[in-house]
Length: 88
Image (cartoon, rainbow, N blue to C red; front, side, top):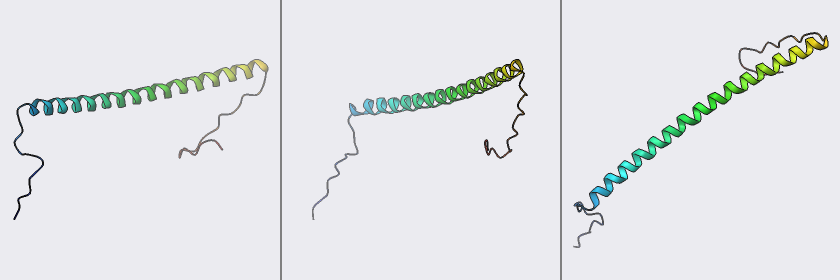
């Protein structure tokens, strides 16, 4: 009968222990950096949405002002369904 040798010894030397701590710290820092990047992307997305909403309102006001100056009839605002179906 032969004994199978475990390729991973249970006892580790003291030199290997600090490396494991550094690896855990590096993983923790990487997770924190990924979470910070995720929050940054979300914030940028929200800011971009506000900017586009402001630009759309500005363009609408400017177009209404141009229609009034030209003596054209004002356009009625389209009422969109509450389900968010979009423009038809």
